[in-house]
Length: 176
Image 1 (tube, rainbow, N blue to C red):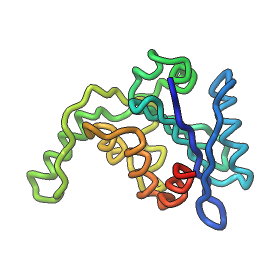
Image 2 (image 1 turned 30 degrees about the vertical axis):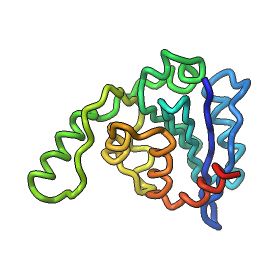
Image 3 (image 1 turned 60 degrees about the horizontal axis):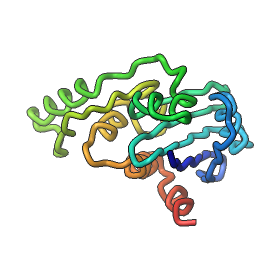
Image 4 (image 1 turned 135 degrees about the vertical axis):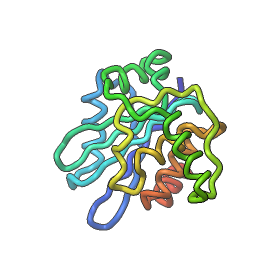
């Protein structure tokens, strides 16, 4: 399986980004250590791991050093060594995508939302869907993005980075 892993770090001067090599990592703690290494200032560090245009895993490390993980689909852990490494220990359930879709449909009925609700999906997100809430991406928005049929992991990452305010940094990294 091919993958792209990139980290964005928020420091005093704003966001910076860098690609992260995950080859040779033995466990999730090594992945977290590589993310911490990117963030020398001890601020907020977020890593996006996109695999085979099918799966997205988001990892976050803050100043308090706790690792938080979200995966777009639990199936990733069953289909690859990298997926098992990133999501194998994730037990915390997230909101159900169907609940988010229903909530969106209800808000559409109330006339509060102009966006079309996402179509039902086979994705089974796992982990902490609220890990980016304080950065402008609440759990329901993250789940909406994962539920939106036809969106690639790179599209979801781009949308998240736009909401977080680091889209230019991520785009520069992809173009490099």
